[in-house]
Length: 272
Image (tube, rainbow, N blue to C red; front, side, top):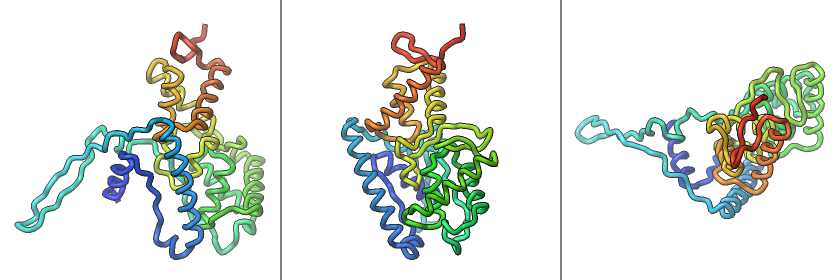
């Protein structure tokens, strides 16, 4: 698995967009797997269109060295080793998608409210803050379905409402569990490609990423701040829509009095 992950990281460093198709899914649910491929192709086209607008240049290749171990006169094992400190070493805060067993013997819309509420809370515990649409997508994926119809969406919405009423989660349309820490998450390797849609980036997470960049650099220019935030979320190119969402985050922090403009830089506002 380490070798497979390294191979993917090398290709992505050269600008490739990777989509994995699992053999079991293709065998058991070919139509759902095909739908995922079609969605991946559509998103890849949009990504490359954004890269063309941005004058995209691939990141430098993953720095790799090779270690050889002689087993005998005729057999040598060569191992690829990523350099320490590489940006691709797995210490990135990668987005973790909820993945747990559900009772597929019962259709999602026929699942009891109590059970669906428990599933929704599990998703939010792993992925919060998370948009309602993505909670629905995760439930669909857990059932191995290609799309979520109106009955599934309604079942998830009822469960979300119940979870909020019982104080298990809070928010809307982005949901978290009480006291859930907000961290910036890299979405470059997610399997649910809708997570890479700018409109489902949680405002709280955007604010956290922007402030982290500002604090780390003692301020940042507006355009540089947007670019850095885009990379922190795992986007190799910044589309016009993503720029709008991130700039709105900067404006939100300014309006709240958290940051201010000092010369060409956006900095933390210091209390008088």
